[in-house]
Image (cartoon, rainbow, N blue to C red; front, side, top):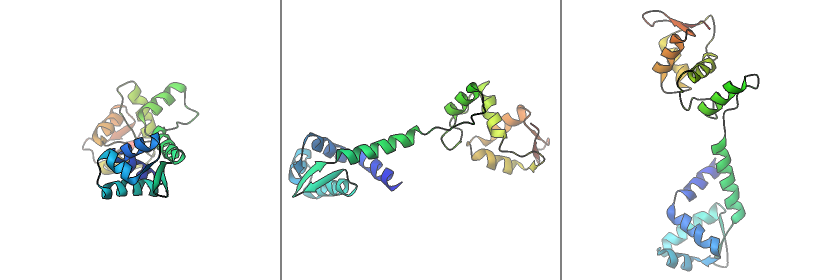
Length: 178
């Protein structure tokens, strides 16, 4: 996790990106980096020091060079993290798996609530987190749904409308029926 934070710190700072750009063309001293980027000696030392600390650059006798391998490893790890997808149960049909992969985050939370008929697949997924033969308060229903998406009222209503959850007319009690 700390490595990812370091990567984000590097890639979100324009000055550090410019330093990486300079060093990707060849080695340079701190003074050369400062002059090319019009940085103060202190700022150039701060940025180069951080890049050296996380291993993106190395220094030998006052000359800095880019550590391409370390930068590539950090970038690859970051990209892999972003590409993680929810992996649906293999027993599901291909259409269902496709909808779940498209609408769920890697942690199983709902990234996007689709329109019908795809909504039914998301509701079928969500209802599995409720037990049969158990009474729930509205607050308990909202707590379970909130783990998946902020739209607790909308999803709760969708589950009731789809006749997956039933409720007392005053909303005091909910239970799973499908």
